[in-house]
Length: 181
Image 1 (cartoon, helix red, strand yellow):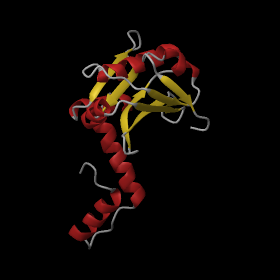
Image 2 (image 1 turned 90 degrees about the vertical axis):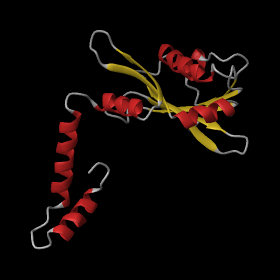
Image 3 (image 1 turned 180 degrees about the vertical axis):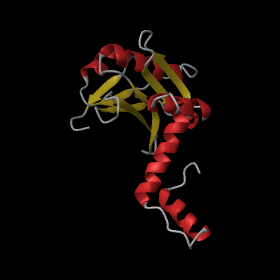
Image 4 (image 1 turned 90 degrees about the horizontal axis):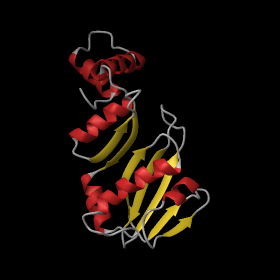
């Protein structure tokens, strides 16, 4: 029953056994949460996300802390997004959400723009902090996607994130800083 909403489970149970009392939505949510937890066994959410990316054949890189064995860096890009970025590498927009996930780590979204003005998700990444070192790692992975073509972005739009600006690695790049991103 992967991907089935609890309300659909409830409707299905009612159709199969209309004479029996139906579970409440809360009971269904609790049961699905318990099942998900059992399926995950001993991997955390980030590790599960990485496993799903591998299974779906995403372009991905990750790093694990040698001491704690915790996943510290993740970079993922859908194969179609990689193709789009290789075709239209001219503009890259990067922004992060900060402390909005379980790990309180920045989640960075990289968006590209086609010549028709349509935007597309290039990749997403989670890094431990918004430091220059971590942004260098992330930009290296972004450049690795383009290594096949030898192209690089001409314009990079960001929100004045100094770690990202200092980590810039593309020659001739114009950096546009936008407030309120």
